[in-house]
Length: 285
Image (tube, rainbow, N blue to C red; front, side):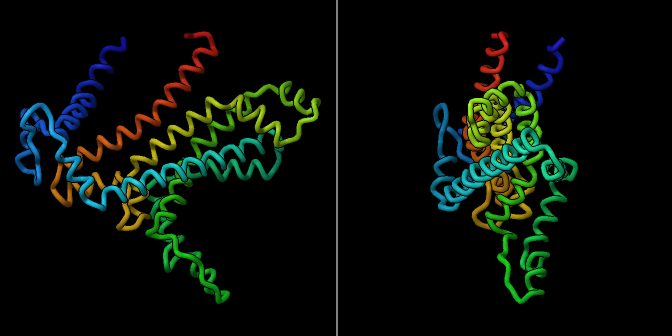
């Protein structure tokens, strides 16, 4: 029953991925021949493979800077998203009221707004002639400009990725039995201790899943940094498009994609571990 969709995935996803990886290492024959003919700075392997495309990337001082900026945005965004999601989820679990309900509602709103519209709105909100600057100007003050900055990318990335993490954190903490919380309170634990020793550990699996999905999404995102980010440094998602379309260097674009995949694989390992641990706890492994 599962064979047809698996074959479709292998044919239309797996094969192109393998071709792109091989192309980045100098395998320019076969189905890669056309891209090798029309592309610039294409390196062909004399032996089995060649890493000249990667060497060319790292020889350019702009690429290591873009890689560092991408990792920075990914780490900061993931930490902020998890922090906000945990904070709102804790309020919903321990202090249910109008404040927690309002925050959770506001946190889920970005789920229903297309990323391209959200990115454009955030850019205009924080740009040099945007709402924030105009509002401060009414009082003779000068607000900072976050449009076309790495900070602006982080703000937009947090806004876009918060809903999923919030839903995962809230569902995980709602599943914590009341008896455990009451027992901790009877033992004299305060709110901070309950959060750190009961709620967060019991909701660890959903939180890890939320963190990995957030990190992988931010790592390869294109729309948010394209609209709100600076010309330099740029995120790797924008770099892939730049090398492929603007510079006509498909091999370098494939090499950047492979680098993104390698970094994302390290993050995805946490997701696999979380699923394995969850299955083991449920007795399915």
